[in-house]
Length: 124
Image (tube, rainbow, N blue to C red; front, side, top):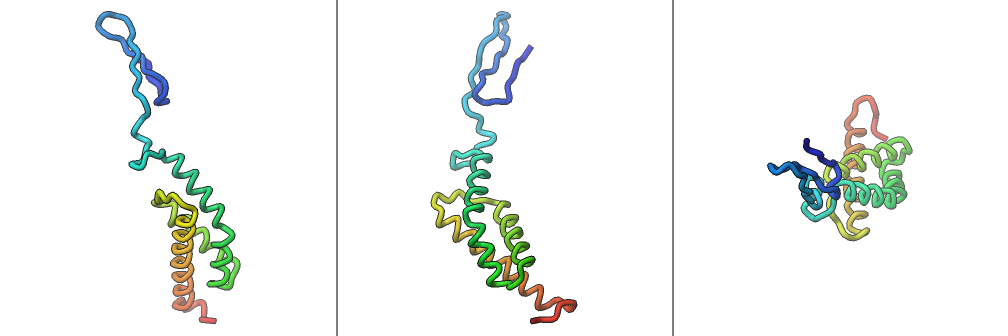
């Protein structure tokens, strides 16, 4: 009978031909580790932390560009969705902030363009 563990820190006990169990320590699992050595969970928590730190700035910029609270909220949500698809492994807060701001400006500009070309919504 094989006993396995889902945690990479726990050893696996496996029978051998002699009938006694041998402990095999696999070490850290490489399935959930990104190439830079951080796990997906670490990357996601870093991403969430960085985004929450920048949220006020992003909201302010979106409101200045779009001049509408609902559209500004939607632009920030779109920014988060776009950024969360492939979060980078930046090491500084400034790099994250400038990356988020660039994505937000692109999202807000796209929303402005759609607003101006939409026949149901006359331009302001």
